[in-house]
Length: 296
Image 1 (cartoon, rainbow, N blue to C red):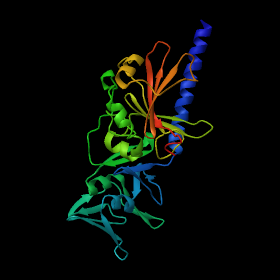
Image 2 (cartoon, one colour):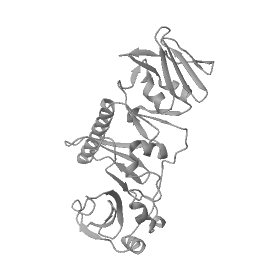
Image 3 (tube, rainbow, N blue to C red):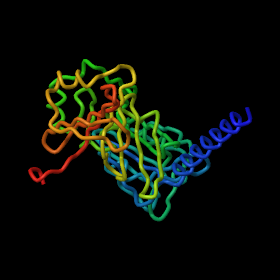
Image 4 (tube, rainbow, N blue to C red):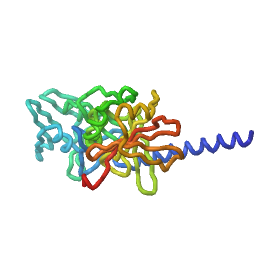
């Protein structure tokens, strides 16, 4: 009985340490902002002040196509785009959009010669939707789409189309692929509900989970290393894969688990790896880049 309780205590301590490590890692990473399929780079990163997030104004408004002008005498910023005029004054909580006054939650300020505005004002002024995700250190500015975050992979998706879209670096039933990067993924799939962070000796790694689809950063900061599919609501067998896609172009043992094999298919510079357990069931499908003498 004592051994049982001791094991439970060890498990609990391990889970707490893992959670603390994840939160600590998230807290030390700089906040990143994505908009229109790409990351926005700032001279000064977003600032948390009085429990409100402020962002450097010019990079975001420029990405939205809003041209800014600065009046040094009146300390006023004016932005214009297609019949829309935005005005705000440093130190004032009153701003104007097409002459209509709106009240800001906090006054804009200048730091290191850059104008900072409340994050919420970005949405009000640009017409975009701002998704603020502090636990992920992520701000996603988008056009207010409805995202489908929970996606399942089912056996009926095993068709020849998988090999066709493999050449494009994506799965046929998911709207983003390896070439889209973080911003592209966010714009079509939204922010994932689960992000796994690890800090091995080689560096920080991330996995973003959308149902059965796991986007793996590996050790890259701005692009994906691989996309893993781990079917959780269906059972797929190797026979079904071979019948649907034809014979695999390569087969080799999986080093991590005894009795597991990988069946690989290649198209262009990309490959599928079907990981098969000893009973012939597909445990995962990995889409990633591969290099050969033909495509170097």
